[in-house]
Amino acid sequence: MTPRPASTSASASASSHGADVGSGAGAGRAPGRRALLAGAASAVGGALVGAQVAAAAPTQAARRARTTAVSAARPVTATPASLLQTSASGLPFMLGAAGDGVASGEYERQLGRRLDLTATWADSTWASTHLPVLQAGGELAGWTRALDVSLGAFGAGTTWAQAADGACDEAWTTSLTLLARLRAGATGTTFIRFAHEMNGNWYPWSVAPDQVGDFQRGWQRYRALQQRLFPAARLVFSLNHNTVGLDADSSVLHPGSGQADVLGVGYYNRYPYLATAADFAGWLPARDRWGGPAGLDAFRALAATWGLPLAVPEWSLCADGSGGDAPEFVTALHDWLTTHAGAGAGQVLYACQFNVSSGFGGAFTLLPPGELPRASAEYRRCFGA
Image 1 (cartoon, rainbow, N blue to C red):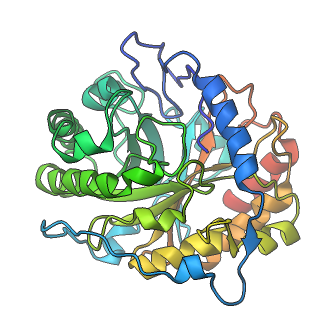
Image 2 (tube, rainbow, N blue to C red; image 1 turned 90 degrees about the horizontal axis):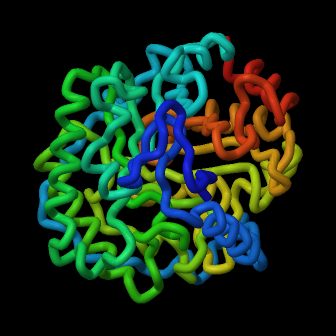
Image 3 (spheres, rainbow, N blue to C red; image 1 turned 90 degrees about the vertical axis):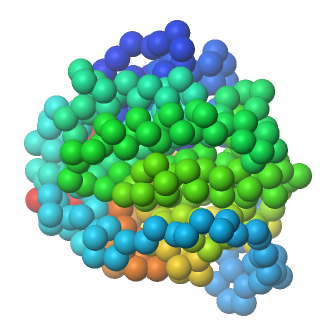
């Protein structure tokens, strides 16, 4: 799950509006967000019970047909080559990082390689309709390379049924129009992670079992707006690697053909913790108790089925007790990204390391070296120049 606390910012103080600012995380979260995420972490641990590797025949749940309504809006497509923007890093996949030192260039100096992409979060309605981090004077105001921006769907008190019927149209229109204006001069693609991690239970837009149809209609409504207001952007359907609260294979959320340009998955080395290369390899094809994807190869297979490239918009290790300093995980992830890199269906388009220290005591930080010294050294060796 996204490891962001109640109030974190890479460069700005919390706003009374609940703005999410900074390339690393959101500032001004509602009180109790840390406790909520802690509860979600416990739920994730419970959800892993019964998870199994489906290396042979797929489960019945994985085989069942998934029929959804498809929006009449014409998809805006891009050639695979135009999506893969790796001139900065020179790697076969787009190298990304978010958080400490990215905007200033210090992260790249320590890594010894330039980044192709960074990320930011605007989870609250105020944040998504004001985007302070991209405004003049904001931390990422001068960033013109590719950008992954997470936009929350709506706040507490709103439902997917209401959103599907147009209740969020004004806010979504304002957000997309502003984002298109602020990114008008950028040379890199803007990847919009709308309603990210909707298969968890820690956001207002989390999808309950009886809301799947409403979610799909709401997503289709947003997609139509995005294609009209910011057609140059690419819409990322971004799942969490563990499903909590949906009580189903997360792929049932699929809103239909043409409704997204990239499949994303947030992937932190915890729940489960993969300490060795053998652990990493063994978990690649894993599926959860409902037959949904849990390992990276399972998500890659889902992306191939949907005809989309895969992204890993958030990844890191964790030194807070739920993970550990695992250099072999870094090596294995690098090799996996390199092996499967590309912009075609089922290939890996980009990966973004979550390097935010504020609010986490450096638990996820790889640069500069801190709580994860061995992983940091291996990260520089594998991903650096």
